[in-house]
Length: 310
Image (cartoon, rainbow, N blue to C red; front, side, top):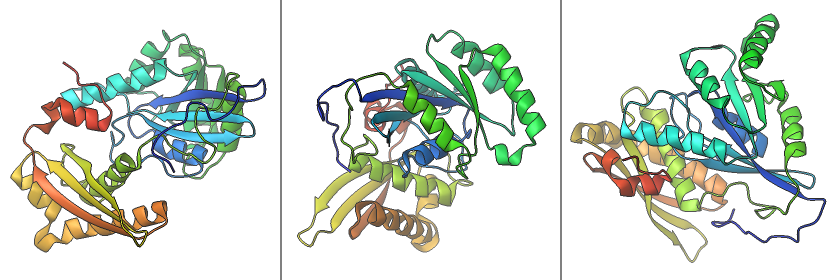
């Protein structure tokens, strides 16, 4: 994986197609899992904790001569804090800039207030829209058909797909559909590139995932991870230093854990995944620092790829 995209990777012709697909939905609908499945590799972090995705994560997939850039957007909900407002604004911004939109609905939850609000706003966006019912392996078929019918009554979807992002059921059909919807044009990224995230940022996301997975019942959302240094060693290994920022001293103690147990577990899990991703040995050093009210610091939003809401 490379750190930067290439804007002129091939000569435009009438055969190649390329475009953006924005995947939107309520928190925990399965957007990140679906993006990873469509791309065929992990490009977006996945946890059981809602609102894990904070910024736009772009995963790049190929189908014959078509290149699709799937935009994994933050879950859409009613924001109460500045960080949440930035996340929701980013999600809708990503949707409006795409060539087509896929609305992912958790088939188990059906239509709730969050989905109603999304449908109301989605109806005003003049782009091709596709309905994707996810987690169909957990719902009876009759219920799925009824849910699809109700959703299509509220928004004009061009197609409806019923998938299991986790198991991969019918995701190939969805990929084929999006491939055919891409506009004619040159590829925007090299053939071997699966995400436009710089490696430093992807490494931060991987560690943030491990923090969530380890401490999801103890640590609030007010934590973030930044990669401070990235050093390529002579033996081919990589030395990475990262800082986990929290807002209060008691949160720092939660991340460290008794006798450093939690931070060691987080470091081990993140290092193992980074070794697999980079295909080399990784020396990962994690530090925990208190930065009060970092959620009100515009610089932190820039680090996360978010616009700072005034």
